[in-house]
Length: 418
Image 1 (cartoon, rainbow, N blue to C red):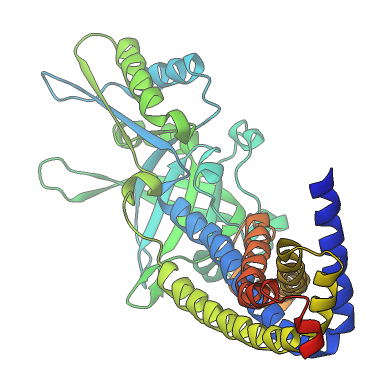
Image 2 (cartoon, rainbow, N blue to C red):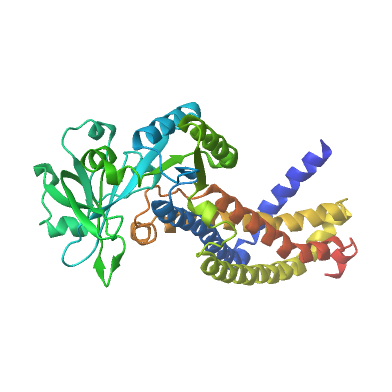
């Protein structure tokens, strides 16, 4: 228990000395607090911006791990019928307890006079798997799958071209679907799909400055209108846990092939951004490295300022330290007492800096500009706060090391000389 008593008394002495010399070190600790705030904010901002980067990638390629399946006859090259594929896909999902899946088919819709159209036939789970953002209305729900009337979701440009009607009035959109002549490759006018608009998504992408008219319809509605075109071009997607993606994907591929029967080859591949960007770097890394470097430079200047103040303070305390040595204080006790003065001071400055960083990142205007469009805005990461606290303690230890060594060498006779 002697070491515990010694540690507690050292902390008490350090706190008392900080109170006595608070005016001497307050300016240097202010610099430390600001630099810790900047460093912590950069670490936190990096993690929070990474969330936005992940979400933007997931909108295109899907959440990790998104697996896509396709099948064909190994001898003839023909695809299985849509009904056969759906039965095999459903059986595979049920066997492996996969909760999120979607069928996707790109539709050829007659383009508008002033741009291009991109319409996809999807299942309701597609919106969750691909994080489709919404401006108005809602994404497809399981209840929409039971509707007798087709429903659709269009982007803002398409919605504006229709006069931006209120969704409560059940506005409709007409889509002229085309098929393709296998011999000439020319589009063949097909059926027309009239659907009620239930949601609006933001504009994304375009050609020549003109936004692409993007839309989504339910897969079952498109399949009912053009089964010969939609069925063969279907992509089957399943969202599985990334931790066991490779093993589970192979097991699902084999199960899919077994359910299709002999003669069919099934291919499975990951299409999410984690698989595609393996080994790539985060585009925010260069900016965060520069900001982190600046924060560390400011932190070093704060540490030098604190070191200078601590050295001067120790010089004026030689008489006091010599008296303590004459009453039996060991060199180790004096060393830790002086060292802890610096550490305790910088830790309190670090706590103040972390609070400043948290408050700064919670400013509404800053959040609107940095995290615009992010569905799951992350809270302030605890790891960033712990990193800032550890850095502040390390700065205090480094700034207090030299003064503590000087104080450790003070002898009782020095109390008479100074």
